[in-house]
Image (cartoon, rainbow over all chains, first blue to last red; front, side):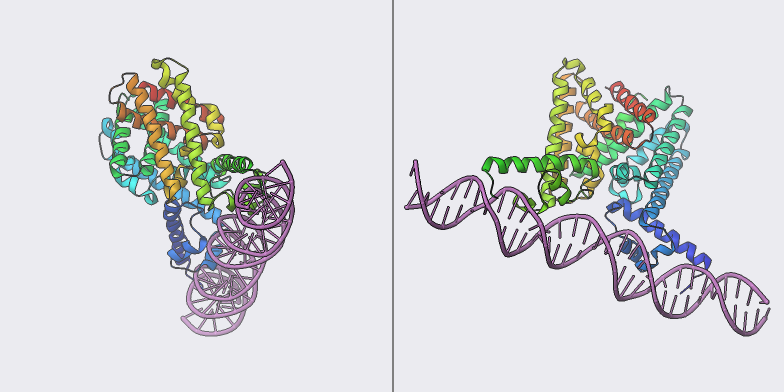
Length: 191
Length: 191
DNA sequence: TGTACATCAGTGAACGCGCGTTCACTGATGTAC
DNA sequence: TGTACATCAGTGAACGCGCGTTCACTGATGTAC
């Protein structure tokens, strides 16, 4: 059943969107091609009409996820004055919503340890994601006149990623919220 | 070929040691029972004489890994004066060696995102590991007279885990070292 | 514009492989007398 | 202490299942005239 060129493109985008969400939620190894295709309203056989392999999809899905996160963080800084921008970014990243919804959040926190081991395009994509986030934070700090902005950006991103990860590991919501709150405060103190 | 009680115990410990290392290196999903048994010098069939399931082993392996890390960090603080203890702990955690050797390092950084999704004993073990590390950092900060030691401990551990993770993702050793150095500096400047 | 043919998105069965787990068996250890 | 039996760590084949991938087929779309 051949489809319109536009329909085909939409289907492809739909698969990527589903994968981007499900991979972050359950890990790349935790979701099968058949699962993804079913979630996208298709059968598994057609998968390879859109992607060369599961790994190729994983690459695109990670890329999409990282770009989403980057643009959301950018947006959070654009809505406030420069001197509040970093505060807004940190609050957005270390929000309770972000902690509760890995499937919509930062791929570095959701797939970081998996990405370290993967050895191909997925790894490269993650590297680029880290670099882009560092650049965003760096330029934002520089704009606010923070000294040693590049070095500080390293510290900020480390704290963000680690804080989000820990807030998801810890068993109670009390502890989770405390980690988010305290890590936010930690980052923003004496920037 | 039945073995001595002592030999049996040693074999069991050997399997845990191998698993603890290999799981951290390749992820729990990335290593098979047969692989582990071979690394331990055995055939796969005997595995279930020692453990109920792969998951049961994963739990013990994570527990062992976390305890190792905790005691190593404790040791790093014991070798210096109180006022240098936190600096020593941070330097030990964010060392180049730790970044290069996940298989011997902190299980939270190595298996964090996998642990968040696992739903049984492994998750519980990781929770306990986080709590123990937080307690260590907290008590150390308190001993040094740092104010809001518990809140600061949250920030410190977030930065440690995130910094280590990022240092492993980034592609060049230059960038990796920069992240380690800057995150160390970032943490210590906030205390 | 209409027609005939080639293309190709999607289907569903099937393949091949790896992995966690089970099982019958072996033979040295531990135990009961 | 010595002997007979039960236990059980370890072996290697086998099972069952899931998963990534392939393939023959379908029928609507796109294209060439």
